Amino acid sequence: MKNFADLLIEAIKKKGSPICVGLDPRLDQLPPYIVEKNKKKYKETREAVAESILEFNKGIIDAVHDLVPIIKPQIAFYELFGYEGVRAFEETVKYAKEKGLLVISDAKRNDIGSTSEAYAKSQIGWNSYFSKEKEPVIGADAVTINAYFGKDGVKPFLELCDNDQKGIFVLVRTSNPSAGEVQNLIHENKTIYQMMGYYVDSWGADLTGENGYSSVGAVVGATYPKEAKLLREVMPNSYFLVPGYGAQGGGAEDVKPCFNKDGLGAIINSSRGITFAYQKMDFDDNAYAEASRLAVEDMKKDLAGVGVL
Image (tube, rainbow, N blue to C red; front, side, top):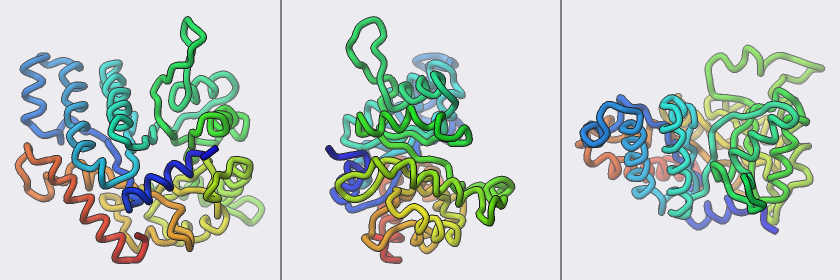
């Protein structure tokens, strides 16, 4: 049976693109006409916010679903608005999947024992509620996780990868400026991020699919290309989720080391650079979706220019 990496590779080849669109809605950057319309209908409530986010997300998805294989909503921007925001998150995931997209829940979950199992089921698994029928909860295809708890915190996620064609992306070398405070510390002549890379490689060794890639991937920031080159050697069979392109300063040349010689092995995420492109391009707010499509097309050209497409 195909694993998550196989499904991802199939989608990448079909769309001719390794681009992941991050859906991180910020209320003050949503097109004003969408917000005002929903405020008029739902007053100044969290429901108005949730409906605004959902309408905005659907517009982005409609504009780019034929160009990209996968999206990545960041759950913090939805939890910020309580249960209505979480509803918008769930409905965004559902709508994206209806449009044929894979979905990464950027939730960075983890814990130990039954708590970790609950996190895994909520994000990429299922629950039976009052009956014996399995029903997806969030229903994402993959989730980002923090593996600081070690393998017993990761195991429930690995079980879903093995049984249900799901994937995980473990934080290894993140793109934020202060990441090195912890990730660059040395243990037995290896940095913490290298050690985490070795763990990711071992956790995914038995979860390799038809294309030779594991369901256990790694988050490796575009802002640290030298480290990415090293980690590509440490984790040859892991897919990299690469944040940091665009708004955080990473460019096409910076992401090249994240790919293998077969041209596979990485998906490059862009969030604000795509979703709020209408502001940089000086488009009318009612043309935000068209601007996002142009931003994806420009990103494809940028990546093609350095030979990663």
